[in-house]
Length: 363
Image 1 (cartoon, helix red, strand yellow):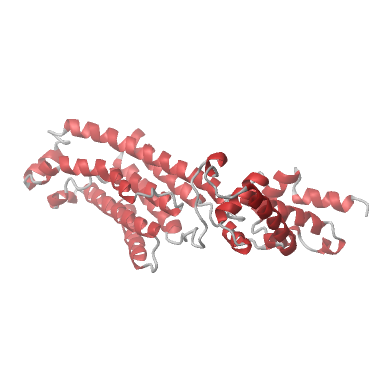
Image 2 (tube, helix red, strand yellow; image 1 turned 135 degrees about the horizontal axis):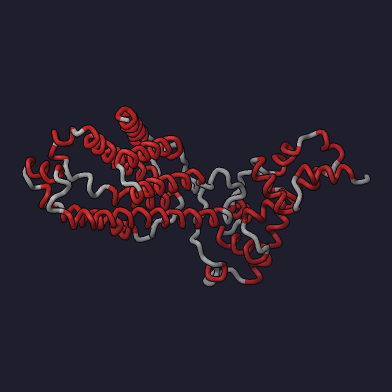
């Protein structure tokens, strides 16, 4: 078990070095860098407690107390930054650190105690700090659950937002971040229902593995300039729009002409920003037209064209030598899973069932 924690510390150090040395760090990279440092410090302090070496360094006693109040905060900030849902008034983010700051202020009297007094308090299970320890346990649990739930809500909101901006979701759906959120939720489950430090920090080591595998290689999903939108109901979203009815109708006509004549849907990476640039309008206006006149989000709008193109291609005798997946790629689908799911949803048949039906039809 001891070597397991040492391995976790080593991996955390390696990840931290990679994050620090990463060039052109995004805002989310910077948040992850600070968060990983706090995780590293927390795991290292636990290791010293686990080996009882902490009493050799009494100056470090108490430092670990506010750290559990910070992990949920950094999860929220990381998710919000990646999905472009941070509050506009960034100073408000500092309020999230208030509970940890208040705990540090309360512990100021503990930090100035002598080494012997600190060690005696810890060896006597926090004697003199019984009320603090009870309130601390509640604060840890509430903080952890609150930020895990909030981060999950942001991710759900993100899933809706990206459908208004991208025609392919596989690269931007952040499913790995959902796994990360559930992973931290699992750690808080261990904290609340088990409370065994060795088990909890074993979960932390696994969590570090997840961050190392997924977090470092995460690109800025909105790097191409797509406007991240807030999760508003359609009527509220467009209440203050400057797009007139005539302009909306004209834009809708031009949009359909462009999609049909130039077959832009065949570009698997097509975004609403790309299409808006082609049309010379703001992405928000284009999104409004698609939502209101097509009664669809951007993803479903483009997918409908791709499905119709596939149905056209599969009906041609000359294309029967090609695989269904190759034809799907030709239509703009980037993955077999997305193609099968979208096609079944639109037609009620799988692509192979549809192809069989077409092949059995009389010429």
